[in-house]
Image 1 (tube, rainbow, N blue to C red):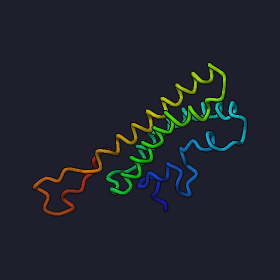
Image 2 (cartoon, one colour; image 1 turned 90 degrees about the vertical axis):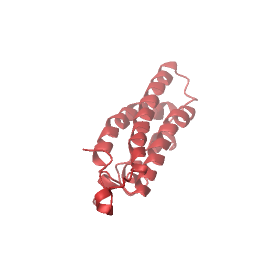
Image 3 (cartoon, one colour; image 1 turned 135 degrees about the vertical axis):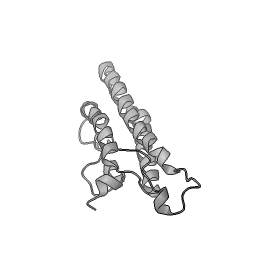
Length: 146
C-alpha cells in the first residue's frame, strides 16, 4: 500500500512487508553473533530509533483511524517497555561495565522516543464532538495540526 508510511503505524513497527522497521529483534533475539557483538550493534542502532521517531511522527498524517491509533499506541508503547526491560535482560550476560552503562543510556533514550510517539497518538483516540457538529464532515479535523 503506497500510503502506508503516512497512514499506518505498522509500517514502522515491522509487522508489515516494509523494510522500514524500527524493531530491535535482529540485534536482541537473533543469535547471529556473540552477545557482546550484538550488544555493540544495538548500542549503535538505538540512536537511530531516537532520530527516526520525530520523522515517523511527521510522516503519520492525522487523523488516523481508531484501529491504526490503537495499533500505534500499543506498538510504540510496547517497544518502549521492551527497550526498558527486555533488552537489558537479553544482554545481561555481557560482563563489561562500560558497555552496560552505554546500553542503559541507549535503551532509556530509545524507550523515551517510543513513549513519546505513543503519547502523541493517544489524544487522537477520542476526539471531542461538539454540539455544533451536525455532519461527520463538520467534526472531522486533525488532532495534531501540521
